[in-house]
Amino acid sequence: MNGSTDIVRVGGVGTGRIFQWAHLNPYPRLWRKARLVAFYDLNRQRAEEARDKYAGVLREYAAAHPEAAEAAEANLGELCRCDSLEDLLDRVDVVDVCTHARGR
Image 1 (cartoon, helix red, strand yellow):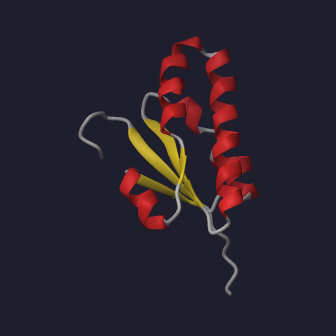
Image 2 (tube, one colour; image 1 turned 180 degrees about the horizontal axis):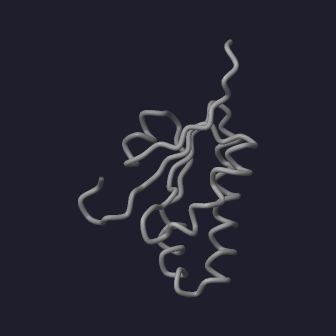
């Protein structure tokens, strides 16, 4: 974990429909313990969409829960789409993996 805080920074890998529908939605409620901060997908546009969707989810949560507004604002400032898995790993403490199980 990073040394400056007890908040775990999470990165999402594989940010398609299931990630956007199920994985990212719980994170705003975890604001005291975890922040979803980085997004990586082989499809750059999907990672950008997930980042943007999460920004919207964070804003909605903060509007409904004023006690979380400051944390949500800080989280918004940390959001990034990563160009590589290595870049994501340099920014986070934990990885939320949501890649497909199909063989190639």
